[in-house]
Image 1: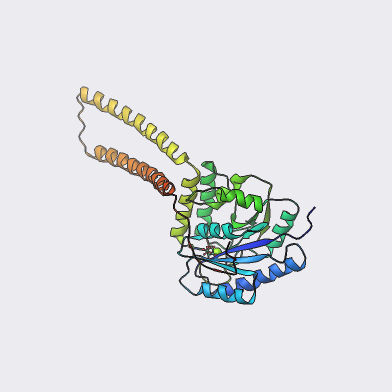
Image 2: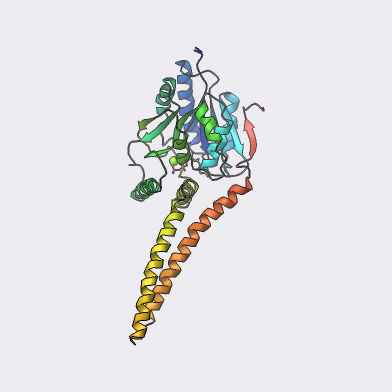
Length: 319
Ligand code: UDP
Ligand code: MG
């Protein structure tokens, strides 16, 4: 059996993280060092910071950190492509035995990485970081997240409760994940589809170490819609059922109207007409919206556009 320690790559997406980067770098480097010294991982293990097209000087900080330490690698995307694509870019370029993804802001406890590695070493392929509570999220974010999990479960998408994108993937899990060629990426839904041996580790989620959230409500909503429409077609089915139900209702209404007409009870008010028209109008527009979402997805998928372009790299050898 091969007893050499295996390589670990810690992938960290960074978008305008100038404030938090130094703290993050220090914490993650010391954890990496500790794991190397304790011989759990090989000396060639590294941290890969993915600069997701930041407008601030995040990239120069990454490069600077790499000049002193070859275990600090960097990848600069040519554009801001969003958290999920930044993760994919990092995972694609992290050719290691195990890959851990973690946010730059240290809200996820980096000390849990050691537990993840321990789980890997006893044979797990996927280790999910699961937060114990959502106390650091405000009431609004917490309620939205809860409703979203419930909705996703109803729509048949398997998701790990209270798990964000803090996880370890073994080489084969990582390679399998990369075989999903889809343009619309929602990792929290995709990873559980891989199967393999999985386990959860728990941690407390902290406040951001510095800087502000890069996930305003608009981006969170976009991620939720992405999650639903990229992994479930049930909304289309629901629309069909809803349409059928409304159609049956309208048949009853039509029969009723005809009978009233024959009986000579002519209907006076236009209010009922307005109610019905707006009701149908609303339903139709909603249905069109949902169908439009899916057509939009198909449109994006068929183009098979590359997901990201790499602008520059730091400490990564050209293949
Ligand atoms: N992020 C990114 N690209 C973006 C937005 C965010 O790479 O367009 C990164 C960000 O730098 C951080 C992680 O994704 O490392 C999660 O973002 P954030 O902490 O702002 O989200 P929150 O924890 O507030 O939901
Ligand atoms: Mg955060």
